[in-house]
Image 1 (cartoon, rainbow, N blue to C red):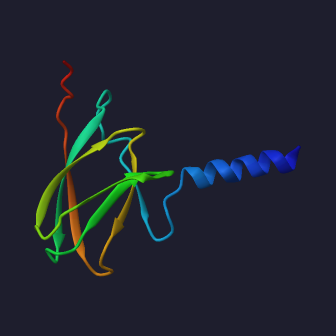
Image 2 (cartoon, rainbow, N blue to C red):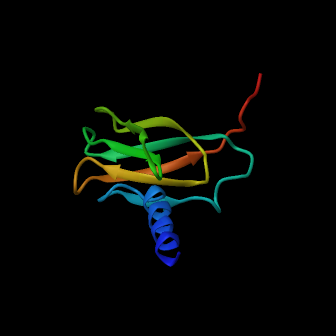
Length: 106
């Protein structure tokens, strides 16, 4: 029984983790409750670098920017407030600012 509990814990941990080399960013305490998505203003240097973000455990949810622009805005869903981040260049610089806007329902 202890083996299956340990194995289940390992599978859960793997599902919630970022891909190797990616970094986990925890914004749970900073995102207001009730938001389904947030806009991120991403600035990268050099301008041709790319910034990638996705939900932990769901690498298929990856979004990227900035496609030869120094600054871009991307909309990301808020699941639990944690995100995995990857950068395309090892020494690139990037900053991210969250723009909290209430979701509009129609």
